Length: 300
Image (cartoon, rainbow, N blue to C red; front, side, top):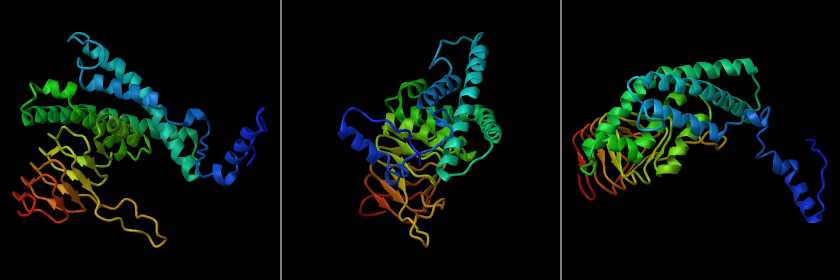
């Protein structure tokens, strides 16, 4: 490893620089992408998500939109989203290659990025429909909500699910890094931690939301409702022969349709929670639950 020679006027700082440049320290954390421009940019990703919100929910976010101008606004935003997202996905591929010390042709990366971007854009009508159902579920499930529009504009569940439904499509396209960044944007804002790999059905609502964790291989059916502090997690982590964790195995719960999980409940492992079941607050569940069951502390 070669580094350019530069010294400061303070010997103590030079000593720290020397130690930070040592290969044993530096190599563990250095991501050598082709250039700084190859790294994903949070500012660009935030703009992408803002524009997508204006596309999904016209009139709620971004410029005021009339019936006559809606097509113009959607087309302008989609054009910008395409260019910005394509470039950021390309950066995600470059990052993944740098981490794995592999290299592909830049043209190939760009073509893959374009394909993944178009795959997301083609699903935007379906994503909007899912989010409209989520908004309706929030309104119907919370007596404090005055309209579905209030849930769209104000509720952390909707903010988290908007990010998740976008990130999940990119995750399904095997886009590296970008889906996780998008999910963590919502996590930072709401305290709701949903891995982009989780599969969540329509009419989903998280009441309050803070502290909810939904793991990568979780499957949630339609018309499900969670309260704050719920965990859909893994019970154990199988290891390979060399002691490293086995990646990509199904290890999180499956929730059926019309399942309600109250505050603080912890559901762990690849277990099934049957349709129309109710899991009470602060319950620890590690075994299958039959349809229609009511699980509370101390008894079923």
